[in-house]
Image (cartoon, rainbow, N blue to C red; front, side, top):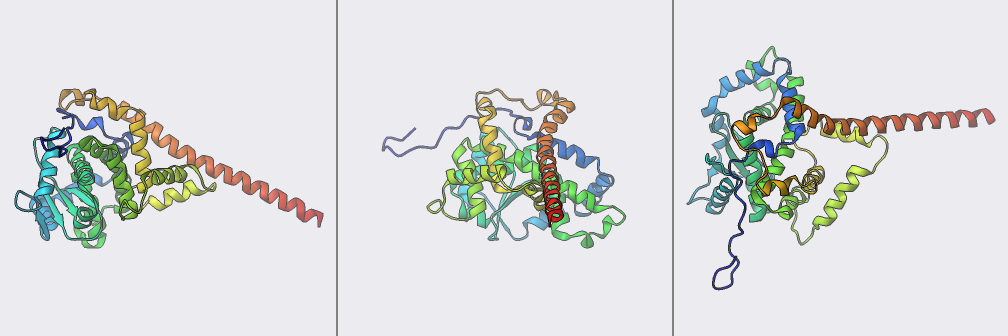
Length: 335
């Protein structure tokens, strides 16, 4: 589409009318959230944190040093937000803020009325197509209702247990680990939402490359990065799977190579293309019909693969260790 001068016009995107978050939510996201809600003391912790900060308190905490986007401030970002809400058919446009920090990140926070915060580092690094992906990612968190638990996770991580005395008496470490596990899995869901909002496969994958390398596309190559992601998943020593899990236990986000590979698989499975044809669950009664057992079944295969990889590698390591010991023992008897 172009104007009479031949200048390319805005790209047309399919409006996903009344799309339900079920369409993009990763089964492991839902499984981790269900597990989180069953952790002893979790409900009590949520109530205490919400009661202490409240909606007004959390806004003041996150907004004090940020600039609210609108027609007169960061108008370009505000336009991308309006465009993204239109594509996702989301009528409740969240407030969008930019905060001054070099770290490339963003977030959807808040309790009753979530809002989106973009770090200035992300605004400076990403181009418009990539920023559309990022805003769509955060809007996906909002539509999925992730903001409450994500805000609680951020508060626990940033303020620390010792600065939250009103949580005395609650065993917070199991809650923290369960929150982080869900937090990581929720990113996989929001990555899909970012793709649906932008409808740009290349830009969606390119975001992970820039998050990982932080450089210009003049110095980086997306195909090489995707190859790197495949290598990370496929090769390594027998204990690499264990190390991968240990490396992510305290992290809030999955590794960017893994996020790229996971989104690529979702695209290749055909679900993304299917959604663009209009074949997706709609908000309301249709979305509520999804069975809890469907979530358990879908998530089981995801976690089973992770567990199988780990157990298989540990078993292989044990076999190799036993063989090495036996060989060493034979050699010692010959001497």
